[in-house]
Length: 156
Image (cartoon, rainbow, N blue to C red; front, side, top):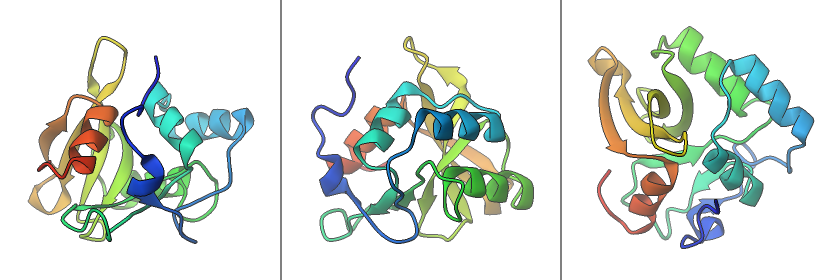
C-alpha cells in the first residue's frame, strides 16, 4: 500500500536543526522499535522515508496546532528521546507512540493510539491533554487521514 500520494510532505514539513535527521537505516528502525517497545506503523515509516522528522511549515499551515513530527534518531529530539520524555517524565499514558508535538510545548500531544487499529493495522490518531488528566480525543482514523486534514486546513 502506498501512503501520502496526494500530499506534498516536503510542503507540510520543514527541515530544521532540532526535529530533522538524516535518512535512517533498517538497524536504526529496529533499535528504535526495541527501545520504545512499539512497532512503528507502515505509514509512519513511509512518512519518515520522505522526510525524517521536521517542523510544520507555518508559512503554509499557520492555523495548525501540530508543530513538529519526530524522526528516527537516537539524538536529542528524536523519537526515542521524546518517547522517554513524554511517557516517563510527563506521565502520558503508554497507549502508543507520541509522534506529534503541539504549540503547547508538551502540555498536549498527538499519539498513534494502538488500542484501536484499522484494517491495515494502522493506529488511530488521538490528541492527549496532559493538563486535563490525560484526556483523550480521537482526531483521525490513521496517520494519513490526520495529515490529510492538516494539509487541507481542516480542524483536527
